[in-house]
Image (cartoon, rainbow, N blue to C red; front, side, top):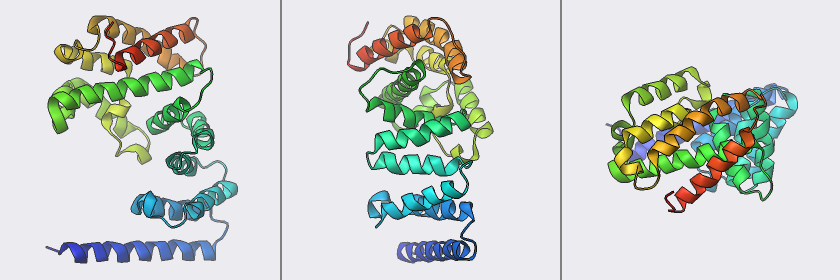
Length: 254
């Protein structure tokens, strides 16, 4: 077995070789958009943000990639994440919205968008409200199940069919999102199944029967919004559910 120190040294050497290789590729072909993206990605995935000497360098690499190839969507996600982690929520939101239009199936972008939107103080669109509602609901569900089942919450708290469906959607999704938590791929019917499967726990915080009914009503709205179709009464329904969920999160059981 390789000693920890030697293993870390080996990883550092591999990282240095990969960085040099990518920089050489940029020098040979300065018009190659993907080389700038891959170099920025290597920095972001292998080095903790707080340990990176120059975030501006990574930002410039990603922007150069998009300058050369505006149609690329992956650099937009990484650029949005980089700006978000620096607290530049409005700038990050612009890039996440572009990706949401180009890749509406991306679940990580919707999660980031919800977090960016929450930092704004203005009237929200029904799509924005839905992003925030689902993000808050997911966090609430995970928190309750973690309190009950600890680190094994996914296997013990999530019904088998819901687990299987989420894993299948993740497998069919974007390659860049294959390592994300499976619950990010849940729909409102799945959330309903989770509430019903853990009724004794969630009943301490909400009227489970009432919320299961709400989630069934929201799923077709979610699908319509995802496909940019207008639906009468959608905003009012989503706003009502969002406001009621906020009350639940504050400990006010209906």
